[in-house]
Image (cartoon, rainbow, N blue to C red):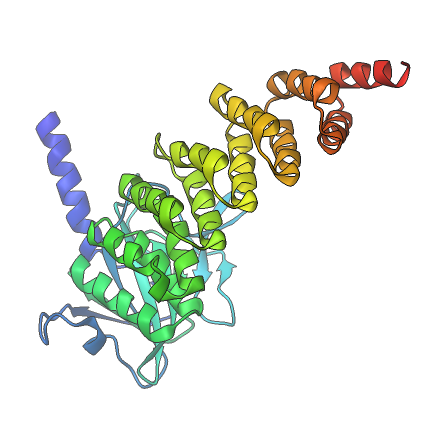
Length: 348
């Protein structure tokens, strides 16, 4: 049984690489990837008139469902138009039935006048309406060739939607080279907006390697705005150690804004450790604004954790502004314990 399962997994991965996508309303053509010149996709994704090109690559684990949804039902995407729109098609006639998520994604490019105008990433079982344009499907594209081409698009396009979509596509490649490219794009030379996008996807899609890069950014990057983005990216990572750098930032970052943001995202995570860090900031941070934002973060914890601590702060905190914040969030909570405390305080 184990051998059968392994063989099925191998065959499924290979099938995903060559499987024809679910495309309607298109003049469809299949081409094999050419290893010459030098395996360069730029020479193979070219067209004078508007044309869609695409290929499949193995993707990182996770939710790869990027089809349109309407009232709980999966639909497809219209590729043409000023923005992609949902349409009702879900599969092509006689197309495959997908019992499980594919281990691959489809990477698509809209090309006109030999220039890439759009980049899209879709589930392999997502229905796509090409708007009557030619659609060229390239088989057996190596991950390295895909990543090299996408990185070139980021460099050529600068900070625009094409670059941002290319960065998303890079982040979803299973190949470890993708993490290295994102790390490069997160460096100062890439520019602010490109850095921010790369940092986000390092947290969202690159696992332990992404956390390591973000931790380093938090420790050494001089930009307050970039460190802020790194804190958020860590907050969305599914890695168990992703919270550790956020705790350190909440205590030690030189910027009150970054400390406050770290406390905010800790407040969304709950748990005894998060509550202790937030209360510690209220007691010890030298900046009143950070203390006030920590009170808000505390109010976001589950009520059984938050209400007793807010009551304690409203009773004992020496900073008047911080006490006022605690009273405000107690009133907003609607919790009977909070309302009783406020009533008792007003009657003194």
